[in-house]
Length: 166
Length: 117
Image (cartoon, rainbow over all chains, first blue to last red; front, top):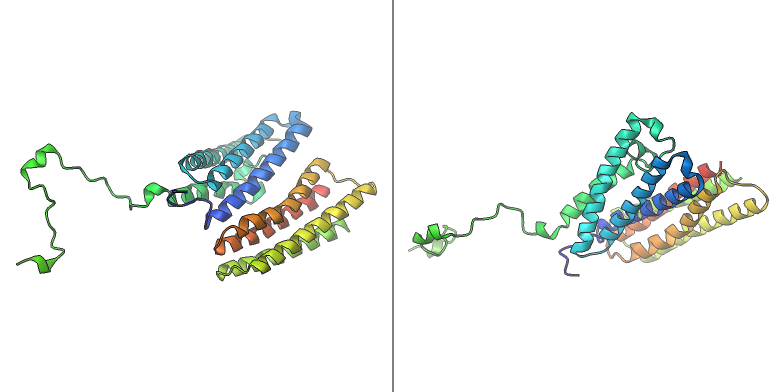
């Protein structure tokens, strides 16, 4: 629990909730499709199953804290974003390959485009809560090297304290 | 008649969900109100599943029985799971999570209504 900021608290509470719902519904949907009519649209149903796995992993990664969970969440949300963009585009270009819809068909239009928005929000939230972001991101300062040894070792004083001047 | 039950569940979960989201926007976290609201939508979901079981026992079938069963189980699971998840968060975001859980039940019920045919 030494994580800079837990991804499952604050607004993250809602994010994990929605991810959990999608993990549940995509998993159940893929299970029903594969069990009852796999031959009808194998590509679509395998993609549904892949989407379900990605949602489960993203939910776990966001709900738990620690660097491992964070890495899992980043990978899952990234795969999800690539997946929804790829499947969304392909489903519009070659609709005959998708006789039955997946979660990601048409960029998730069957789910109110939530599948398109969710990975963007997830990645933004992971970035917002990232521990490396806590100290404001600035270019790394060059450490003093041997070439600078002619200069006095202490950093040059800026006029921040005018009362110290004689 | 079945659609009437579904419409009632949708109405209750929308009203409760939107009401709780207003509380979240106000920064409130009234635990008893949240628990009461989630209990109300859970009761509505339970009533709907009982009606569905009775209708099925009388010989009617949904268009896709496995899908409908999945949605029915999810509709019973979402309010209590949402309550646990929402109340563990000690901020307005917990309130918002309770409200979203109710709206999810509304969406599930819309789908159940469609899947029944």
